[in-house]
Image (tube, rainbow, N blue to C red; front, top):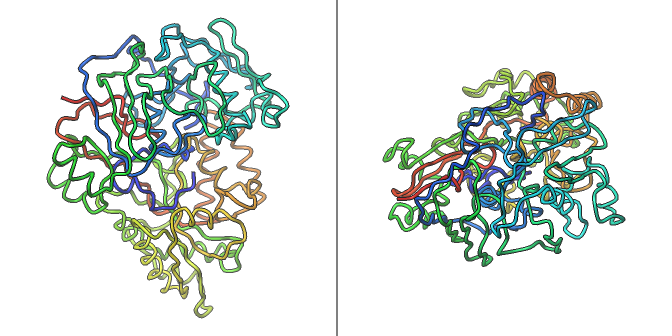
Length: 550
């Protein structure tokens, strides 16, 4: 999802549900996944009990799995959902790898790559006591494609056979899915090597087979088959997850409840966590130096690499940055260490490429200086053309205004006079994503919905995806050769897929340079004295369900 980089609130302020989408966001087919031996697939639940108290700076957008799209919503759903496959919080993983959850094993995939056959375990139940059958996942897919819901998940299910008829409103069921006994079969219209990774998104978690497709989504109480279920939700005030009494899956669960207080300012939240009045919540960007100095790492203060990228986007459809040579000059001119400092202590890691560390397919590109600007190289590439003016869009809160000032100072050295225009985060996203808007540079962000290189490179740079509005490709790059290579890479799986994307990443970073990536944000979390069992999950960040209290 496009983020108004730094109104990137939660990651910057400390409580980081980074599975946004936005999120988009780790592709592993049967041939490309290392199937982990999970001895813990017997029940791993514990019974210490207690209530976890969580502050959120804002409300959930939705709690309906087919509609929820913000980080806080996905954080709650990660505690409540049961998926066919998932990124586990019961195994330490250096890079995201899928394991079966409600599925007894990874699916059998047909030779043509278009048919997935899952066999489900028989011990999953909803919080109502009803058994989870394949019909629960059929319903999840059908709700994602029901035009009454207008679900953002529809784009991730459009290659399921029968999806077009459902989206058009001419069918009420999917011809491409079938449930028989404990077997679920999903048939695609074409091979999609990242399809399994898409199924790990909360959009497709098990839902009751009779859950209606109510416009605007369903609210609380909402039955779930994971460790918790949503018992209460009072918008803009509070929400409550209660433990699913029928959960017998592998996740280690000890809490009885997770209570959310919504709309708590970061400064207030920090004081409450310090006093033990809350257990975690958003943090002011300036708090991290003191928190690290007082607590160090690993007991109450935790820092983990995330998968959210911040970059300086260059509008390639505008005259100034239609020139790839000048775009490369900008990459040499910006001072990445100084930009990273604007995100606070331990805010993230410097980068000069589009795929972030920890993403399948990542290979170090080493395209631009990470220790500071190379002004001479930048000036040589920029040439002598007098002072050129550029409009620089940035968010009006968090680190974005300061980062914009750093960029402005850096670019003046290569003859670019950047006029900074600060916008509300929502307006910034709209302006960047609307074709034809008047801007040359923009501080933008991207956080994947699922961890696969497609969710970065194809989504951000395939020119055939550009429309009049709501574009993720905010650089408006459309290069025929790159478009063809992106489509070819998307059809590959396993090592060949990742090698193709690594080469694309290198070429996009070094040669075409549609933007200047400079930081991959960290997840920073501070918890109260009574919190333990801190566990992080790929994409979702901190696992609320795995925490324990004393």
